[in-house]
Length: 567
Image (cartoon, rainbow, N blue to C red; front, side):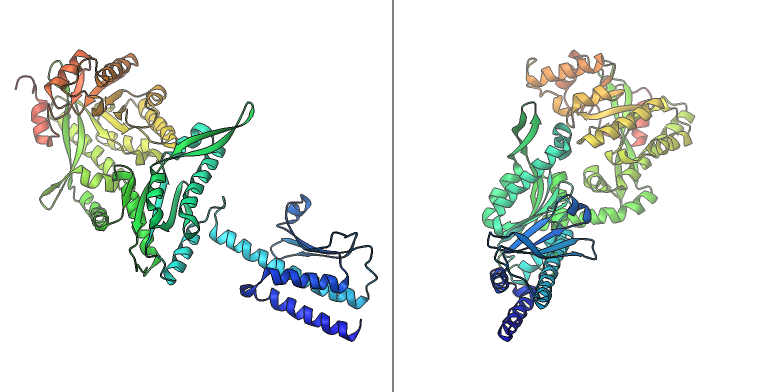
């Protein structure tokens, strides 16, 4: 090789080193032009590289390839280099010649090998950076993850670009039902397509990231806020399934509950956790308390958060000091006016004031505290029944509420039996009252719990029937004893006998008895409603028409022969 050629090679090689060792200043166009110069310098026809994650991927031909240069005349391999990295990834670089390629000297081969190794080192490092990006900022389904979101808002904050934007955290509504109805594979496609709708709305100046499951977090400009809210309320999402005639196009309506935080102009974020905290509390409040499932963060949300924290902090001491009391709301025979049962309802007395359930039950439902309260209430009821037995009082069956939070507890039955049997209470005096479920997973666990209680001769009732998941399936597959008809089925005083509500109530009552279940109507408030229940042969009612929930002393007094139709 002539001296001039050595100098030219050195110049080209130094440029290659400079380009491949400065990734922040990497220019793809310059890199490819330099590869072309090397190719022309040596008379090479083609240069390529291939990347495989592992040897098995290499054997299957499952990898990525990059053609650095190709004049379309390659005929033979001049040089090939295969490198196995420390992560077991495999990188292969190959140089091809054509019919006009001459013989190469040992020094030529040595220099070409040096160039090839430099290129492969660059490809390896570049691919490793992409792998780190994928592992660190994308989840296993290749959604951007929470780390991506935090990095994104941190960068926007550093350049003071968060003002005029809004952040959101969403949960897809009843998505487990979608998976159950159409299969998880199709459900995954629906989720992906719904996220794509959101990504299209927020555009390149926004982001949507997955937190886990069917929960997502994102950011967008307030100019598109209305469109995003509409997407939360519901949009038709296209998907395909495998049918008898191949793939079939379908679509379904997908909506979400969401907490939204709007950032004013000039907003600056002191800590990324601040947004995360605001979105967390707002999204929870949206899911359990907002009418349409969408809630904007404001001072009232912060106040509710403080109330929640206060209740959670007071709860352990309140439980220890027995501040919770069982109040009993009678269940009454609509024909005779006699008390035939009661529901135990919780009241909290703290610092001389009574705290109503609506103020603390939703808070305790957010974690396992509600389970502790349920066991406390069952203990209080069993203690009262034991005393009534010893005092030779009349005793009626008492129902005790059981939160859905218990359904995952495999030791639930032993805990319930441990409390009941500790007081020697006959099982027929206790009824466990459960609400309908909202997901298929909860349904399976609910069925398991009811079947176990049924075997122990402990009565079970389904509360608020008609408000939850797959109501008819619920009573078809689960061995309930009692069905409590939700107050929404009760007609108004002005309804005629042929109104939709009246007809629905009639058939629900008839179906309940045909299935061998007892029927209780709850939320009864007027004489007209009582008369409708009589006409439709519903035997038992519960509601303010008869009585509010009563302190134990007053309930005991009414247990001793009180009749509501004699007052």
